[in-house]
Length: 448
Image (cartoon, rainbow, N blue to C red; front, side, top):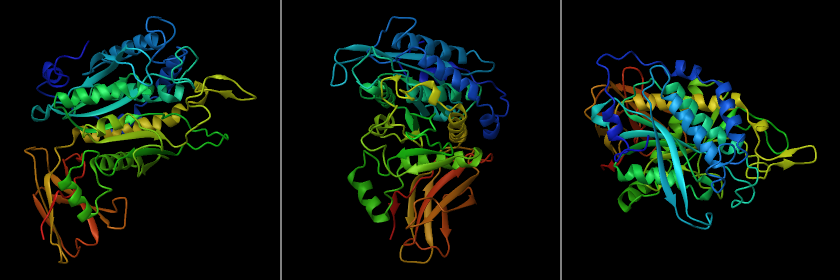
């Protein structure tokens, strides 16, 4: 199925919502459905095509990008046929013109499934998770050499497919896109296509995560550590304008952009539901010298995070697969750890479940009480009947992570007695009766 003329709304409206819907499964129950063996199967199959280089054979049914694309399309279609599945499969072919990493014009295809939202007032809101399905050898223009790409990035594709499998029958308030993107090694071509198309169709992406290299625990010297992962994000929005810049400088909120809040949200869910997984909020956009798929979304003004393993095996990723002296170079399935990838997948499942079911977030958050001992916060609530309370996040102005939370009944203002505005940083989120929270929002105005 191709994308319709309207990427999100037409699909959402095409699927009727039953009059009586069963209660959704809890995030913890859903996390327990993540299956490491399915992750391994996906990685092994994608690596078996020899290479998935963008310039490899598009027509073969055994080797190259064409074979991998055909198999992926079949897998995504199969997920839509699971019992109770609400998923809709799609593909989005598009041309890519020649450039520094692409010697000739070529046709590419993004593949994915959409889980439509059920709130008729939020049909234009969505979450997105992506992973590029192409691979590369040492020479980024070599489309014939073996490039199994097990960790980079069959592991990310496996995570996306597993998330879609686990969440297939859920009925979130807003839509979720699960997308395998094309041409990642040629300049993030598929993610640029997806982000620009969603922007053009006025889809409000409230959060996007790029799963990129999420299956390795072995470092170049054989050291192993499967207890941590990294969440890269911008602190300051790429599209910041003069007014927000001046307010940020006044409040000192360069660590509080929407992308950074999304990273913190993922961390809270991961460390709540997944044993032995430290989710590290990295205070930078990406690995030095790199730009992941999330950057295509942040450039369009959407919050974006890159989820990545803790250890970068620089001697394997992007290397041509070949025998070595007692060591096999190349990104092969031997270095994929399904249990570790399952932990990151569980973090993603629980975070996307909470955020997709959460009520709409507060708007027009303001801060007052400057020069007094009592901070004052106010906001405007959306017309969402599921909002039952407000969660106030707070940390000292010399801190990075949120240090305290307090929950209040549903309201549009709050006085924090004994807490001055000079010492603390604040943000506000909405919450429903099930504990699903929106992303926290920092003040957008100050009253002296």
